[in-house]
Length: 334
Image 1: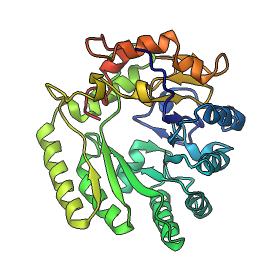
Image 2: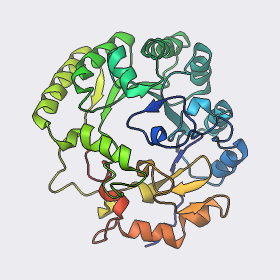
Image 3: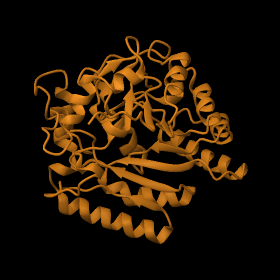
């Protein structure tokens, strides 16, 4: 069965450049990209969006910090003018008062801010180059801009990447979210084990980090106790919270159509330099590339033989691609 319908969801890495060097992110372990050289051009973005008439949801993020993209606000406004639900995740360092107001006025649907600790020491030890005070002020400023403009959007969410080193601070973070007026806290595990990569190759450092820090490696009872405390506090404070699984289910509930993962059938991920990948969970444009917008149009890539071969491995009785086997989303522990 060929996936003839074009996707309704798309994730675009508007820039590969970032001002931070987070320990769980591939950016830390790769050469830095410049703000201009690492950004997607507006005309490439526009042509991509225009090629998808059924597009309903657009996520403007990837390995870089979206607010570093020179054409970022132009991209946001182009998408929201088309009434496409649009949002992104940011590290929060460039979420100034002016930026917050412009994003609220543009009608951004959701805005997620990464905050992996409730204290300056823990947060800044994970995200090298970060400033806890600045980011927390910017979060409060965003909530304030939304209230001042009497807007019901964007949904403001804190994203907490749970690791052994920061787990203990999750309940305190829920308390801060309540104090600031944040809508929800999304807790996730590390996105990939990188178990499919060469242990001594270019992914060695991030693979070793995952082995040391991932909650799925053990200490489940400790993590479950912290999750329970955070859940009780969130319920009491009226903060929505999402918590991940810690163990892979023995018999995971089948997805619609019986596929192992829905993403390659419903959406795609496009890097800042036009590489088309099945999803953002791959982390690394050298791992799985199904096409390049410099060589073919999106529709041609979407319906190509390499794309269909990738999907085939995720269908019932298929052999999952190696890159999927270490993915937290595929393993249902994201």
